Amino acid sequence: MDLDYSPVKTAAVLIALFHPPSTSPASNALHVVLTTRSKHLRSHPGQTALPGGKRDEGEGWYECARREAFEEVSLPIDAGIYLTTLPPYLSRYHLVVRPILIYLPPRFALHHLTPSPAEVSHIFSHPLASLLSPSVRPPVPLSPVGDTWPYDPEGWYHTSDAPWVGGSTYRNHRYRTGAEPVKGLTSDCLIGAAEAAYGRGWSWEDGKEWVGDGEAGRLARGQMEFGEAVRWRVEEGWRELREREREAQQIVGV
Image (tube, rainbow, N blue to C red; front, side, top):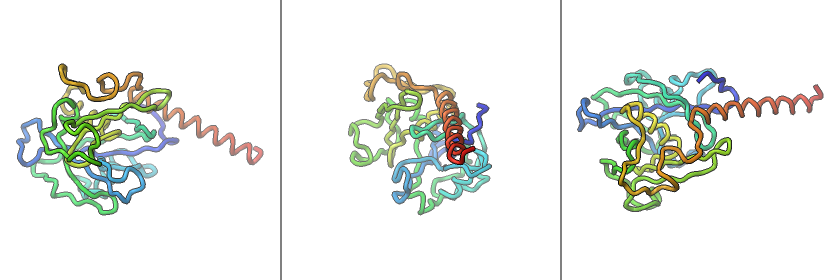
């Protein structure tokens, strides 16, 4: 997508994939490194996230994701094998984000990482494939019902729809994990990563009860595709910038 993102907020996240020590690298049991954000942070405190953050001026997507991962969980800048950069996603709150995928070697283990106390309270992992088939219970211990999972006590997947850009609708996917749920933009990025890694799309298995709002589907009815939504937000950002410039010129009498 050939866009100038100058007038909008942009960020990059690192999707670090690995095989847990108990599995064979030849298997498809990929896990992804996740964090629980510190409760002292101003934005999204206590939520599950991918290592990442907003880009510095002039910084590339890859450089941003690697820098943020080093700062947040001490993952060395040169660790792992670069796989690909996914197309940009737009969050419910209009942040443009690009996920960077890497694969960590078989000798990697979560205890090699160290959380930055100012940003991260917990590091954990979750099976990537579970993002593609939400009707199948993830093969890992799940968090207890309560503040962490206030939905169906027997469930592990929940959705809700909300207004989004351009009169569209946004579907928020929530996946129960061993910590806080994966949801929102993090879910969107991980679904995209899982589709790329496994070569198949998101699907709700036939014959399973649908527990979300509305019809079962990756996107809500009428939801823009992410590429279209990103373009819409960037074009809107340029319109807003030009309007501010006109207002400034009127103030100074130009």
